[in-house]
Amino acid sequence: MTRLTVMVDGVRYVDDVEPRTLLAHYLREKLGKTGTVVGCDTSNCGACTVHLDGRSVKSCSVFAVQVGGSEITTIEGLARDGQLHPMQQAFHDNHALQCGFCTPGMIMQAIDLLGDDPDPDEQSVRAGLEGNLCRCTATRTLCVPCLMPRRR
Image (cartoon, rainbow, N blue to C red; front, side, top):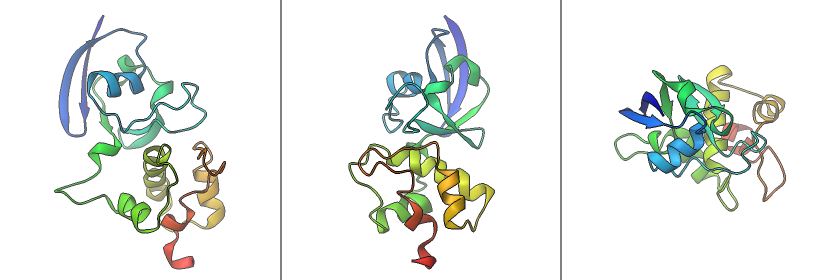
């Protein structure tokens, strides 16, 4: 076992973890952050995307022991004072989900995308979401309406 100290959604956790434990499994099984969805365990779908020190990562491709001393934000940690994060609200307002399985990862990736480019065109959105897959629509462009509401 390895001692892990990490901030998750603003709360400090100190846990002993198996060195082979994936971050996605640590977040879900140890901390109860079930919004971090495990879709493939191969980093193909992006459903497990979280923010690691402010940047999106696929938590199924990172060992928990690699994030010691870091700050993690999950989909559960986005809302503040009972208010949805603007991206969560945009997804809600634009009905940008089918079954909802990919939605947490899409939202986390979309926030990171807008952090890099606050006014992306459609091609930039498509490229920025390339690592996230919506199985319902078989597309990586589910939240284009959320990111570009003025262009509809």
